[in-house]
Image (cartoon, rainbow, N blue to C red):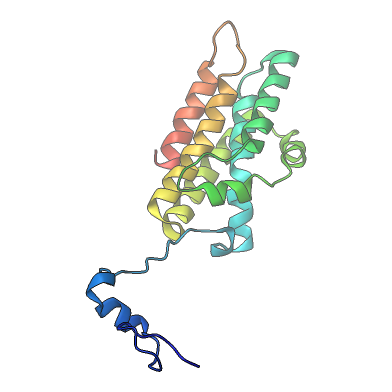
Length: 187
């Protein structure tokens, strides 16, 4: 088999990649392969991942129950919670984590939390935010951790902003819980 070399002579070996780089007309600069690291659910224990995935439901539902919004208002808040989790993940550093967490059965989790007192749910949600914030800070990249925590807080804020309680968009109880949540998440 005959090959043409860089000089065009028949019968010589084809140029190697090194030879191509050395060829002045084909010179390319040094390149570096940089692998992007993204955190996935597999970087956490099963219990940690379950807690991370459930966090937006827990926090959102705690905000929804913080103040009675009436039958229609409560329905709207729960609908907002479900849709906020189910909608397409925001294009941020935590997208892969959010997409994985969004597969959780939100309705089933809401049913689990339904019978608990609002004050208890609020306290559990704040403690969970603090604990999970630490896990995310330890195991995820800093930008992923911050983006996931912001996503959780944004869901809670959307729920609080959905219905009026006593004529105000965000009640004092919801505002207090949002403040505690934000602090626990380190935002």
